[in-house]
Image (cartoon, rainbow, N blue to C red; front, side, top):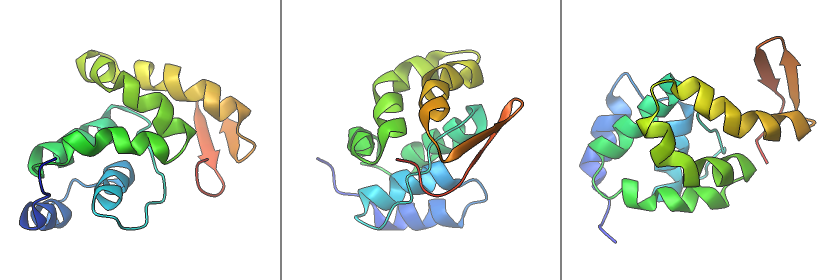
Length: 120
């Protein structure tokens, strides 16, 4: 496995396009506490992709995210499908909605959802 580039990670962290789900990937890869945030839409997904593009060695650690929580466990195997999708929001939602519907910490408000606490 390729070593992670700390300077590249710092450059990414100082950029204006980080996001919680991308930060979760970076933190997990560097052995830091990870809050388990996961991508909800194409914007979140794009920030994850940008982090993996900017930090050599990060992409090969993506499978480790499947250990973080059930949301990541569902998203990781579908990553390439999401990446190839024209409508990333629809694909991501088709993966995470069934999990959110069973999660008592998630409250649905129309098309939006609100989480109380960390994802499990």
